[in-house]
Length: 251
Image (cartoon, rainbow, N blue to C red; front, side):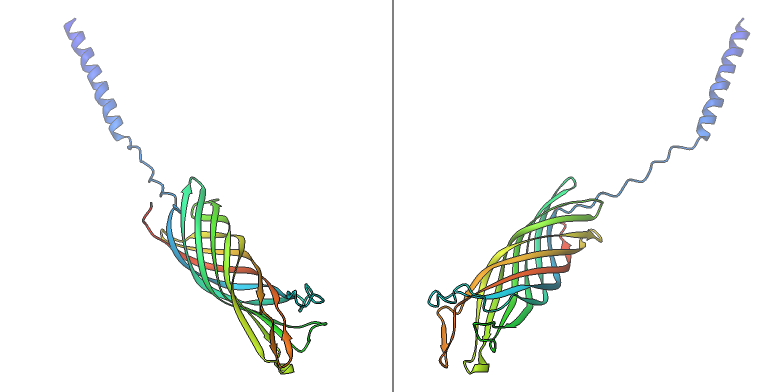
C-alpha cells in the first residue's frame, strides 16, 4: 500500500514538472509599443505670413456745400490689388478635438488702384487709393479632423492705413494726397498643419471691409478749381500663407 502511494505521488510530481517545463518553453507575451501622444495645439506662438490682396474702392461726393453733387459717384468702382507681408502672434486653447484661440497680425501692404473721374466731374483727373499697412485682431474656432491638422474659422476687427490721392495736374490744379487710419471688420478661415512639435504651416483667406473714409474736408481750392470732399470705400480679399513657431510652455 505504501509502495502504491509513493508511486502515485512520484507520478504526479513528474506530470507537474513536465507541465512547468512546457510552460517555460512558451514565448512571453510581447507588449505593443506605446502610441505617440496626440499633437497639442495649446500654447503661445509667433509667425510670419504673406500673400496677395485684391479688392474694390470708389469715390463719392460728400460735401453738403455742393448739394447738386452730394452722393454722386466721382468714379466708378475700380480694382485695387497688391501684396502683403507681416507677422503674427497668437494663443490656442485645446479642448478635446476643439481649439479656441486669439490671433493678431500686422502687415506691410502694397495694394493700390487708379481710376479717372466720371461726368459731371473732371475726367482728366485721376484718383488713386493706396493701402499701406493692415492689422487685424481675431478669434479662431477650429477642430482637428486628424492628428496634427487644424481647420478653423476666424473673425474680428481690422485697421489699415489708407491714402487717397487726387491728381488734378492735367488742368493745373496740382496733386493732393491724404492718409487716414481706417477701421473695419474681417472674417475668414483656413487650415493649419503641424510639421513637428513646434513648427506648423497654414493657409488662410480673409475678407476685410473698412468703414468709409472722408477725405479732403474742407474742400481744396487750387488754381480756381475745387477738389471737393469725398468718401472713399475700400474692401480687401486676402489669400496668404504662413509659418508659425509654437513655444513649449504648455504641453
